[in-house]
Amino acid sequence: MESILSSKLFATRRGTIMLGVGAAVLAAIALLVYLNQYRNSVNSGVQPMSVLVAKSLIQKGTPGDVVGSTKLFQVASIPRDQVKNGTFVDPKTLTGKVAAVDIYPGQQLTAADFAIGNQSALTQSLARDQRAVVVPLDSPSQVGGQISRGDRVDVWVVLTAQGTNGVSRPVVREVLQDMYVLNAGVSGGVTLRATPKQAGMLIYASSNAKIWLALRPSVGSTQTRPPVISANDLLGG
Image 1 (tube, rainbow, N blue to C red):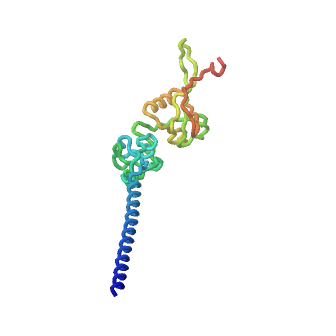
Image 2: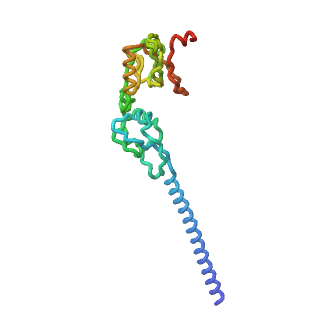
Image 3: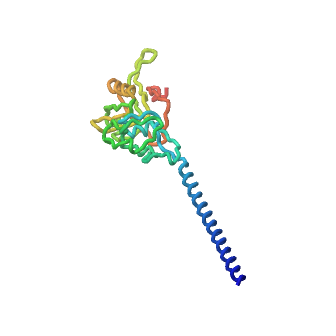
């Protein structure tokens, strides 16, 4: 009888110990799974993400096209858990939008900071130091009417220049390069985006000389030293 009781007691203790060991193993596994998930969540939170932030003050009303094309932004690497909702990661997504509030240097550019702009207005493509100026041209001067919005052109001027010997002679000179076309074919003219000085040069040339535009390639074009062409170049002198 005593032997049977001892055997049952031993079996009960062994079962209890096994249950305890099993529970401890399960608890350890659960702890490892939790720690692994926690570590993954922490790592994903600190993993950097490239987003757009303001490089300088972006005033309310600034077109998104201008922000994207004049580099008022910069790409910053920010921990993922610090990235705001709706933050822009591609400058192309700013097209057609306008800053709804002042955005300060270092501030993330978010969808909440921008509103839909009037895409038909030329002002949506002008920065603070840029102007829209219309150059009146005939068809050959504007590449046979084949220039359209978004193209890049060089501006050539035909005028009479006086040499060092006092003799006047006609010359052709490239005065501006890589000018952005805002509009074309309206009332026989081409609207160019220019600085105030460039606008003045174009107005002066329109009033005192003849302007020709040369269409640039859409990609791969480079700036060159502006040439001056005279009769000597044509005659091989």
